[in-house]
Structure formats: structure tokens, C-alpha cells
Length: 340
Image (cartoon, rainbow, N blue to C red):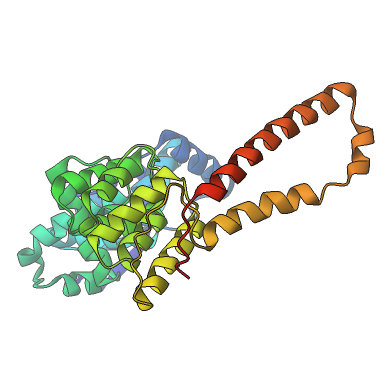
């Protein structure tokens, strides 16, 4: 029987044995129990794939279905019998599981790495050839091999995806591990890894350290804006310090960067000697919304408050009045440089 010939048969479940090259590492009992209950209701729909092994058969793909069939008490299971050489068993098994989306990231990484390590036996010379044989992209092969090597070199967390690890490529080993661990601890979103990795490669030390903190005071997007839109390390560090000190929002930071860009185009020094940061549009924007909200309140609604609520609002208004008086005094004393 050649590899191209396939025979369909209903085989005794006891004639079948697991595949020692099975890429799946985990067979969750609850998942198999659910599949077993489904099989009891409607039998095994998709046949498993096996190859002849002595007087019995060895599973190439479909071990989960075989386990569930045994749990359901089936005596026979539909199977496709293929003639597969020993050195190609893992390749066939990985291919079947990949297209059924049956492998976790780590299981796939392990399998792809093993295939790549044994590429001479398979007659494979390039990752492109391996990708073609598995029916997946060349990029996925590269990421799987990269992630496998990184996990085993740096002892990276198992719960982080292949993509996340691949996106940290190019970082220094210690920094790479810290970024991946932040994703594992849910301190950093997987979608933000690209930005963080790119920023860390070129950012000044203060920004790098801040991004790697448990609770950074700037977002990856803000760090990216500082590093990408300000040409000098001095400006980057100055604006970063200002952003942290005055707790600028993303919009306020963008306004600040625009101010610096405009001043540079006009030949004006972007560094402003000031006691309080009031330059640029960002501070005006910060005042506008809360003031607009306050002015929109209908005073007639005060009549709907009980005494406790009235006292609470009066106290808040007193604090607001006191703060506004302080701001007005400081505003009159501050040296203002219009950079726009």
C-alpha cells in the first residue's frame, strides 16, 4: 500500500494504540467527557487516521476522538488507514492537528521545532518548504521556532502566546523576559507588545524603566509618541518628565508635542522657563470639559436634594471656590511664553 492509498475501515478500539509522536501534550478530561457524551448521542462523525503497526494500528491523528470513543463504550471506531513512513508520522500528525486547530501554542511550537530539527530525514531544506508541507505560512513557522528557542533559553511563562514572544524579537534577553512576564501578569496587553518592544529599542533609559514598571505612569501609546515625534533625547526626557509630573492625558501630550514642533518651525526654543505648565492648548482643553459640565447644571434641580445632599454640594463648592482663587493668583504670577 503506497502513501497515496487510503483504506477506510471500522477498527476495534482495542486494536489501536496512541502515537508516541503525538504533538498534543494535554488531553483535558472534561473536554473528552463532553466529546464522549456527544459520541453517545450521534457516534463518531470524523474518522481518525491510523497507520499499520505490526498486527495493530497506531494513531496518526484523532487521539482525542479515540479516547472519547473508548470512554463512551464504543467497540469500533471509523478510521482511515494510511501507509506512512516512520520519519513522516510527526509531520502527518502535526498537519492534521493544525488544520483542526487542535494544538495549543506550546504543542505546536514543540512539534514544528522537532520537525525542523529532523528536516534532513524529511528532505526539507528551508522553513518555506516546511511551511508548504504543513499548509501554513512561512511567518508562522518562523514564529514557532523563535518562540520555542526563547522559551527554552529564557524560561519564559507557558501562558504567553507564540505571537507575543515573537514580537519581542530583537530585545536584550533581560528586557525581553521582563516584557513577556508583564503580559503573563496581565500588566500589559498582548496587543501593546509591538509598541513596547519598538519603544524600548530606542527610548531613553527613564522611559524604558517606566514602561517596565508594574504600574507605569504613561501608556505605551504615549511613550511611542514621545520617542517617535521628538527628535532628540533631551526633548524626549524633558517631555516624559513633564508628562509624569503633571499627569498629562494622551490628548494633552499630543498638544504639548505639537507646541514643541511649531516652536521649532518658528525658530523659537521649545524649552519654556515656567513655574507651572500652562503653555499650549492642552491646559485650555483640560479646563473646558469640567467647566462645561458645571455650567450645564440647572440650578432648579437643587430643589430636589435633601438636606444631606445640599450640605455635601455646598461643601464641594466651597472647596472649588478656594481652589479657583489659588489658581487665579498663581496664573497672574506665572511667566507665560506663547509658543504657538
